[in-house]
Image: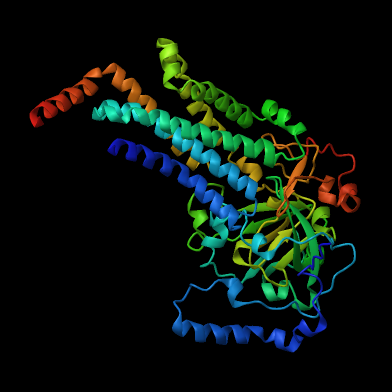
Length: 318
Length: 209
């Protein structure tokens, strides 16, 4: 019998870093960086080499928000990415994101909120509030992964800025830095990347603003330092490296929809019944598996989210 | 003798991508979606070798090097081999256990329809590639083998229609195909270009002998 040990199962207590030490980790990183900088060429280090913080003790895992399916190895989840800002091949983002600087970072909260403003990332997503969520991730290209994210529910963050009654939609914008993001130097898509959610989708407890995965900070290629995770929608809704969150009354434009409106809708809910015009969405290949598995309605989150779309024709609102 | 070595070298070079793919598979270095990786690699090499095969005749006419002629068949058969692997990877590995979608794919997805049509064009060409068939078919062999143009166009369309957004690469291949067509048309309209080189060639040959 094959006994498979899940390397991502809960860490034993002894492996959990003392929070006091964890909060000082940057001092160590800076010190190590200075030391390394004296011997190594600057800019050669990769973010994930520099900082590998253990999950802080405050990380909680609410029931119902973590699948116990086998997790995709970190190596795969960080080397097979669609992040066109760093190139259109799956392995480009890891290869081309080394010069990207995810720190310092601030996010502008704008529009229909009582308290708009620019907020430093540390204040927007408090370390003490971080939760771990293990979600299925289904790409529109018919492959999928299982990824342990670390972040805070978007709804909790938005509530702090007090959305007004006119806040019907949330619009997100990725940073525009062609000097650090070589993919932005070509007009493959309209830069910067923009995405959006309806307010009830944004406030849904499954919707996560993530700053980490696999117990560490997000690697640059996965959307450092802040990205959206909406597990019942296709992966391209999960906008990366967010610098602006705007609440507004009208439905915001979204990058892939602008690029190919017939192929990518605003909702982009995972739906095995609605094919992409050029390929089927009935099945998907879970990374690491040989045969394809059936794609689940709303990526398996039907019980939690189907009510958001009751009465809507999902073939029209794809 | 030298020619035979050269021929063997061309075949070896044509099989190198396959060997490299096998090595990467064996060492577990394929991309996160290994089957897609194999599908893409065998597909792109089909197109490259097909274009290389199509380049032989214009090149021969322009340079006047008649010894190039046999490579058209060699490269064409290599292209057919990769096309077969490409199709088998897709139909057997990619659709493993979901063969009901094969027919749906071929009928409903234009890029698969056109890719499959391109493969079907190559089958009779591969079958009739032997000397016996050339002799048996005579003039009709030439007509039949014009199907390779159809296969080339199908291959480029197949590539163009399947990419999500970045059409740069398929456009490069389409451009090369268009250039090869243009070269053929020009050589037909202005046989003097080819003839001139032939004349030069024979002149230089007689001068050196």
